[in-house]
Length: 99
Length: 99
Image 1 (cartoon, rainbow over the protein chains, first blue to last red):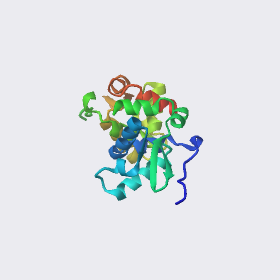
Image 2 (image 1 turned 90 degrees about the vertical axis):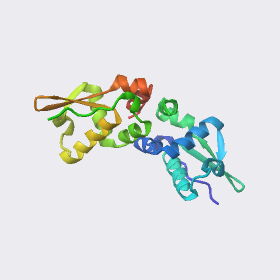
Image 3 (image 1 turned 90 degrees about the horizontal axis):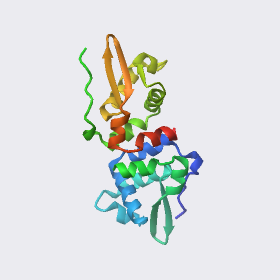
Image 4 (image 1 turned 180 degrees about the vertical axis):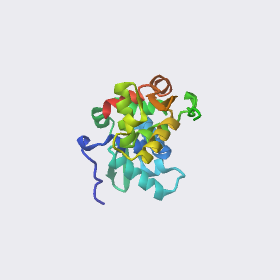
């Protein structure tokens, strides 16, 4: 499987980041990753439908919030905290603090 | 015309605020109000279609971002900055700084 595409920080769009985080399921994923640092998809999916979760991961990746690295059969996800914070200072912290 | 309904700060929802601000037209309204303090609808609408703008004002009001007071035939809009900041500290600033 090829590596996922991750957009460059200078192309992150505020509206895409806000739209991504406006969804409670996606915000849950982000909150979980904020706590644990890195997690595979199975851990993050829990009991939710896998198909809709694939879409959520994609939205989070395309907006620049999530990084997925492939390690064998595992897809390991983490937040792009530093890059997000450089592009939109204080935004992710304010959202995580609020939620 | 009756006064508009404005939700109490403790009922503001993060996902509704993020969804409201994820739209570029609504973010433009908020940015403009941040600069000028208060503005009537006509000033904020500019050359955009009035019908879609009524919807944008409604979304901003229902999420707790916007306050509209009626003064004669004028609808005067302002940000609920302090209440938003109490409920979601630093969030609006981070979004306005980012945009």
